[in-house]
Length: 362
Image 1: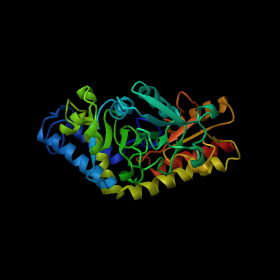
Image 2 (image 1 turned 120 degrees about the horizontal axis):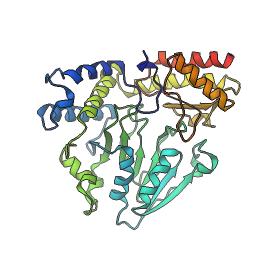
Image 3 (image 1 turned 90 degrees about the horizontal axis):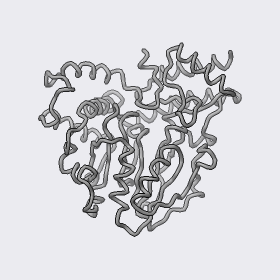
Image 4 (image 1 turned 135 degrees about the vertical axis):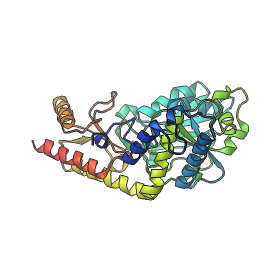
């Protein structure tokens, strides 16, 4: 039950069915009879794990043949460097970046090491309480690429539309909302997401890349940081995180077979978020959402504060006593954060909403 009431921002909760299958696999994978922790990454079994996980992503996202799926290491943080190394190094162009929160701001310094970066909008002066409106954005049609984060996990802000010009390479960090809703992959040239939000445990990063981007890749990239090397090796260029990829496979099976796909997952996620935001909106200011524009609220991370630090502390203490865990806000922001990723059930969200109402009344 405690696993089901885990609102941690990451690593996040996994589906109960996936946890049960993982527990079994730690002792012995049914098809092999060996622990998943001791099966060779060069085995036929693991090659099929990679192949099936790729197929499941292709099915869930309706991926066209123009896009490849890679399972890499280093988290999203390594992608902050690999992307500009591929798309900006040795080019006489400027890359457009949006600075909309904690994680998008982290992506900018590594890009600046590879070339010119233009920050086309910066929410830091206003405390990252909102996202830009379309009128505030001017995209450069000659940019090397556009980079943005679709969902800011720390501040609880989420873009609900695709940004940028279709004529410019579009790169998006979807670490905290990939596979949470349908997306038009054809409009993106590179999408990346570390696993520990919606996809699986920490250790693997999923990259979906348009194959044509690799045709003009610089030739001075270290092989480990070259997407071409990983694509040619079917994501087994070096020893991959076998366990993390296997659990990600189980999550994609769960999405396909138990949830029924991303449209159904999106409906569930919208319902869960609406339950918590209703409590915030009806609290007469007792709970204050971090996002100041309702249409920009995250469906994955509900962030809010109470009237003072003492009440924040007491809220967390009583929540923990109730079995509700992982609600402490990010260290850079404080306050409360309820992360309601795919595996978070509506029953758990209702338990949190009931506690929030009771706490406000008391």
